[in-house]
Length: 173
Ligand SMILES: [Ca+2]
Image 1 (cartoon, rainbow, N blue to C red):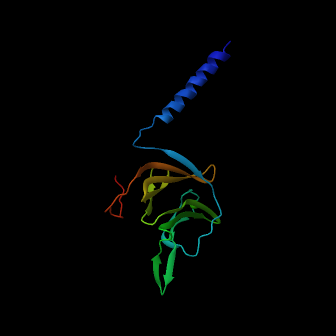
Image 2 (cartoon, rainbow, N blue to C red):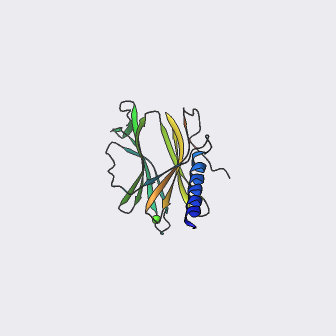
Image 3 (cartoon, helix red, strand yellow):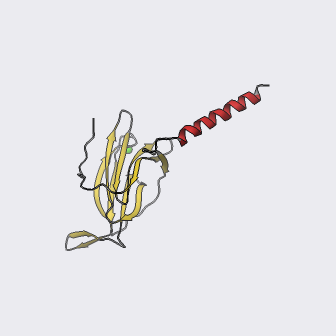
């Protein structure tokens, strides 16, 4: 007797949930991706542009977050970034002991810039990645302790390029 109304209620509930996901604000898109630990070798012709130590998973020891750019020419102690077919490679890697998590690993147009920083909220630490280039986006990466992986969430994305913006950002309180 109760099965059909219960099923109907569930179907309405599921339809309602889907509806709310599909009708997100068009100015802000939110997409989530899981980043599993993956063995990765850093190519010799990549240059480390930034390195931060932070305890992202709360186990008391700090992970290393490294940003690489390439390919480069390292000649007479002078490092030059070479556009290869008008493209650059950016890699953002989290090292946790022997585990590596490639948060970002892409070949992009050579005028693309990438910067990252850590945002501290009450109960989590987010790695925020800002990409300015053929496409620009702001994404956050948080550690998912239960599944030992990172969750990437694209907060904003757009086409076009920001010009003349200062590379130094400050958290807005
Ligand atoms: Ca840790």
